[in-house]
Length: 314
Image (cartoon, rainbow, N blue to C red; front, side):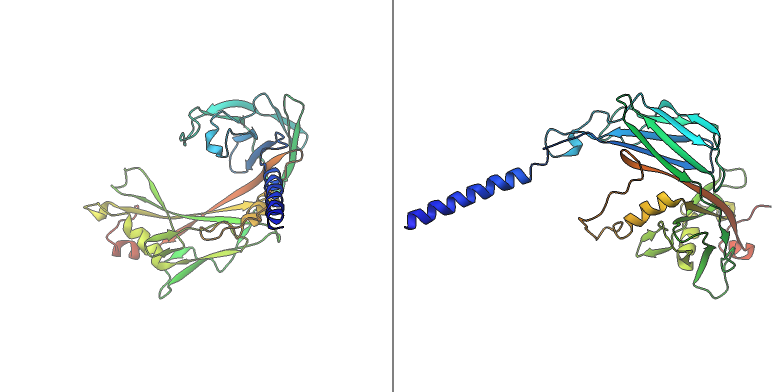
């Protein structure tokens, strides 16, 4: 009787192992999929697109695959108002060559500058007849909120705000402040330093994409940044401070939904297994979106600049 029970248990374990092996066969029913990625920028006349295909690796490490997944020979067209624009293919240098050693292949479109609130559609027809397509609408420009600070420093304040008025309820934004300066007199090259929101110890924390209508910066982070630019400079009076450039990227609906999908997954201490892959590409994966960049300036009072030993432009 005991031997029969043991044999029965062994049989059950064997069936369970076979069932699990079949259920977790990650390479069964593999079907190639195609991805189109193209972001239209309203601040430039040059745009790029990339089409890639999925691939199977010998084992389970995707970095074992070193062939180019770029899909060549696609017919990519952009419909804008009553016009059709055609992408061409080209090569650019690859910054990261740890995996792929060859130049990056892209499709490009020159001499095309969209206008805010304009609608456009992209369509890519592959050599095998597969079609990938999507639409976007260039977002509208925003207005800066009156609570924004465009003159520093604020007497007695330990923080300052940059705020704007939303055009709708779905938009996401990315704000960047850059300190503009020259370190060796008026004739030296211009340099810039991105201003963090705050410091966590010695680690700067920079603005991230947000659906909020403003960001608060710590004054201590600004002072730490402006003082750091004169490190290893013997004569601080040769450091010329010009001010701060304020850049705001306003994302369209597709990019906003993409960042909304990432919200909650972008920190280093959260592990989620239920994150969805966002795509707005009909017939495949990827994203076709757009954004518009707005730029303004922030002035720094001359008395404060001189108090640091720096100079101002004449």
